[in-house]
Length: 527
Ligand code: G4P
Image (tube, helix red, strand yellow):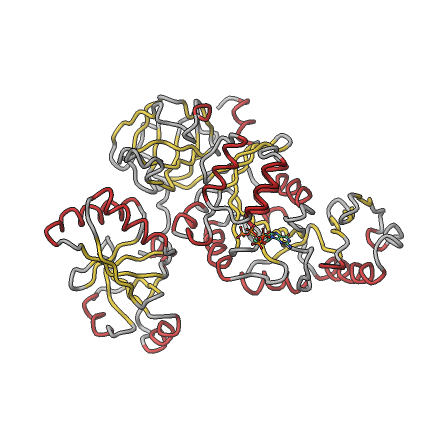
């Protein structure tokens, strides 16, 4: 690949922001976009007022600025970097998409509420990041409010996530007493609300520069904490950070926009540019000459007037040029990526060329499935399959009109292939749906009705945990069935046990030590 193209790739950063709802993911994203010039102040004010960004709010922001992206990818430039933030839907539209987006990014930013520490949804999302060994950067937010002790927050990361951390910035007080952050790498203190930075001398916080600037109490605490961190904290180690084994931690308040640019600048320096990706036959490098990419999300009904779907493609190598021919590895079919290729339904956002590390949207009339590889390479190429994610909600589903069973079955099969939802069958051949978020059921029902002309009836089941079972005798598993445990088969006919809750599962494990259960995330690896 030519030099200028390598330069383009090295400038790119793609990351996902993960958090528990309300920790401040949207507020931080918005501030980052603002600093990147992607939204104007007026947009910010409006957005803050709206506060709860539904998808349409993002569209609104996009319209104002014409950000070259879909509602799920936001791109901006900062200094010499081209930055793409992948929105990971939270709140009500949390679903498998949220997880899958993390399979396409090169790093993640984890936002944590300083008063709450690590929360449930952060744990789930972090698990996907750690499985992929991508670097995770932590932004501890809401320091303008009373916060937990920062040392406890760092300990929480280690305990709740098993993630060692190293602080890059450190808070000076919190809430009413919040006075700023200390940048340990730059040896500077940024003062809160004073718009001033104090450059420290060789002695760092132990020198005289901060005396009379910070309150006595805060300075005393800061010195004690930094002494502890310098003595007993983890050392800053770029190789551990790059392999996702050490998280650089930053403190600030997204709402007040304090600590955000300090974070952004360090983040852009430390986070990786697009790297190599595993395939079933070795690695593909972003600098390889042939074009390759994989589909990690398919969004249906972007335009209700058409049955179009938009497939999101992460480019892994080579150059994309509009109108090029590529092979869809799964079928061997040659497809032309024609004018259909654009990121938004807005003319200037048609993409003529793109490189490794870019995410593009391609219109799909039904050719693609989640996990598909597209390439110009002559020899077959398959990126590693995307993992299956642990469903927590289950429904039994049947067609209202049994005469239309064929439509129903066709819809079920196609939506399962598309990865919209997980589909199982029980021993009576009934269809059981498994989802990560409730919205997936609604979308399923809507699409079956609108695209397959099949009305359905859904009935919620009292299960919340699924485990694949590694066994030669799946039939023997029938004996375990009761109201709190049920046997179903996934679409590869692999046996899966559904449990009412973690407690039922723990009991089962205790009583059946010889039965090997596998978590969804590990299914691909172990079977
Ligand atoms: P999410 O995307 O992670 O769900 O969180 P979001 O950014 O929507 O923020 C959730 C709430 O937390 C919002 O308040 C937001 O204003 C507030 N928030 C975000 N960052 C900070 C911060 O640094 N400090 C403080 N004090 N609050 C912060 P809300 O009550 O839901 O909305 P609003 O009524 O304040 O607009």
